[in-house]
Image (cartoon, rainbow over all chains, first blue to last red; front, side):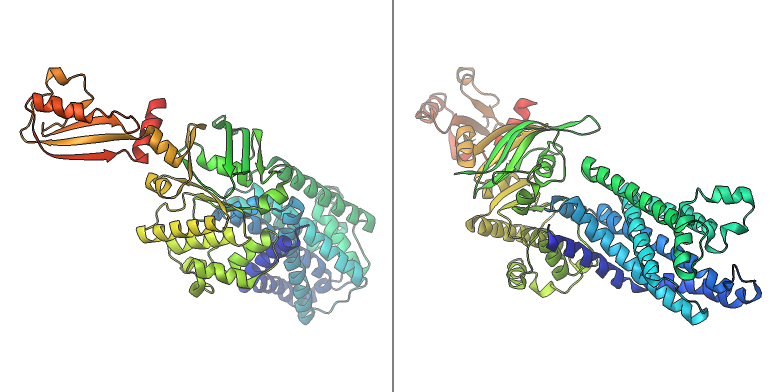
Length: 253
Length: 308
C-alpha cells in the first residue's frame, strides 16, 4: 500500500475544497437553507403534517440527500476531470499507485467533503426547523454510504467526460429530477397508484426512504430494500471503475 | 556498463490503427545520457509514454532496473521520473505544495531538506510559496523538473526539455543534466535540437516512423559517418569544373567562386595533396582554403533522407 500517495491525493483534493470554500461549502449550504426557510418555516407552517411529522421536518432528509448526491458527484467528477483537462494526469499515470489507492484518495476526499457538507446542512436546518434523529448511528451510516457511493459514481463521470458540458449534465439533468421526484418533498404514498409503481424505478427513492427512516422511524420502502439497493449501486460503480482501470478507458491510450 | 532499461520487441498500435512503434529493441546503460532523435511523429513520445506507464504496449516488454513495468509496476515506476513535453501544472498550487505532492505520490516520506536543496538547485527556492500560475514558462518547466526529481529517481526522462526555452536557460538545464549524470542518474532525452544531442549525449538513437534505425556512441557515430569538406576560395571564378577533374568529388558554387572537395576523414589518403597538384596543373589558383567537419545535424538529416 502506497500510503504516502493516498495521503498526497487526499490532501491535494481537500486543499482544493478549502481553496474554493465559498463555492464548495458555503454555496450548497446557503441554497439548501433557502429551501428550509421557504418550504419549512414559511410555507410549511400552512401545510399539514405528513404521517405526524411537520412538513418542515419531513423534507429535511430529502434535501440533505439532494445536496449530498449533487455535491458527491460534482466533487469527485471534477477532481479527476481537471487533471485530464490540464494534462497533469501524466503524473498520476506514471506514479507507483494501484487503482485502489487512486480511488481511495480521490473518492475518499470527495466523500469526506460531502459528509462535512451534509453535517453542516443538518446543523443549519436546526436553526429554521425543529427536528429529531431517531437513529443517529443509522443516519450517519446512510450519510457515509451515500457519499461514498455517489462519489464513486462521480469519479466514473469524471473519467467519461471529455468536456465541461458532460460534467454538468449528469448532476443537473439526471440527479436533480430524480431527487425531486424521489420523495424529497412528499411521501411516495401521496402519489396516484400508477406513479407509485413508476417511482420504484427511481433509485433515489430508496436512498431518501432509508435516510428518512433514520430520522423519524418511517419509510416508503422497507429498510432492507433501501440498504440493498444502495449496496447494489455501490457494487455497480465499483465494477465499472475496475473495468476502467483494467482497460485504461480514457486514461491510458 | 550494465543495462538499466531493457526494451524488448516493443510494438504499439493505437486504437486508430496507427502503429507508432514497430518492434523496438533498445538497451539504455546505467548512468549514461541517451538522446533520442527523430522527426515529429516518429514515435519518441510514445516510446517514453510506454516506459513511464502513460501508454499501454501492444506487444513486447520493458524492464526498468530489472523490473517489468507492467507486472512489477510499483518498483519500476518508483525508479523513474518523467518531465513531459507539454507544460502541465496545477495553476493554483504553490511550488512547494506541488513538489511535496509529487514526492508523496511516488511513495516517499516527506523530506523538506531534500526538496529545499532541489528547489535551490533549480533556482526556485525564492518562488516556493508562489502559485504556479504566476510563474514564467521557463520557471514552470523547472517546476516540472523539480516534481520529476522529488522522489529521487534513478532514471530521468526529459521529453523535449528545452523546447521553447531561451538560450541561457538551456545552458542552465544542460549543466543541471550533467550534474544529475555525475550523481549517477541515467538520463534519456528527446530533442529536436541536434546541437543539444551533440552537446550532451553519450549515445544517440535515431527513430523514424516508429523504427529505431540507429543506436550508436555519439563519437563513434560522428567519426563513422562524419565527412570532412575542404573549401577553396578561387582567385578567379570558374564557369565549370574542367572535364579532366570531373571524376573528383568536387562541387562548384553557383557563383563559380568556391570549390568544395568532400573526403573521408577516416581514410589514410585523403587525396588532398593529389587534388591540389591537379588543380595547379590546370592553372586553378585559390586565395583561401578552409576545412570543416559535418555536424550531427548533417548526419541526422542524411540518415532520415537516405531511408525515406
